[in-house]
Image 1 (cartoon, one colour):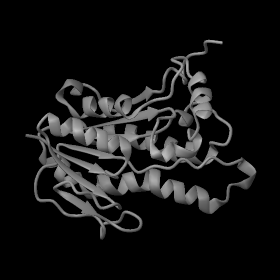
Image 2 (cartoon, rainbow, N blue to C red):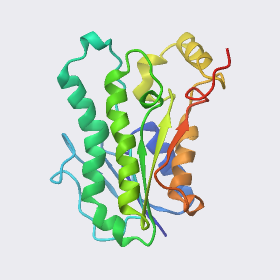
Image 3 (cartoon, rainbow, N blue to C red):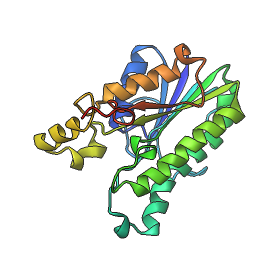
Length: 228
């Protein structure tokens, strides 16, 4: 029985992953700012620090860090504080959580860490400069930690395109927006929670035991294909 820790567990993708892992008989521990009714749940307030995270005295076989942002603005209107806030949530929060639970991950015979980037980190898009900066840092963290923590702890990253979640709500809040966004992708649709959660579940499983340091583009082909 594997112990899996989901941080930012109130997100739509985290909820779907939690359901999938529960059905596969994993033991799930969840952390989020929002109170959840699930067992083994812990809440925190404010930025993630050593003071806000719960301590565990058992091995953590899988850790997934979900907190993220989608703040799209013209470059001229972005303030340094905006960049710092996005970096705090996307990159520094992930750094702190992995560092805090490294001892527990090391107690596992074969642990897996899953982080989240964005298609915008490697594919230039207007109005994405702030989020692209912070997510590119996550990709750098993924590769560096994968090298440093091998062979016992694997670290991989998922880089999705636009996915149908509450976080992306204002970008897809009408049928017209959903259709228009879908047409930007070679596969002619935006992502859904199952597309992303199923990849996270794979990276946590033994089926991916020979994968580490990878940034996996789950983006409907947007980052690599041009069909028109």
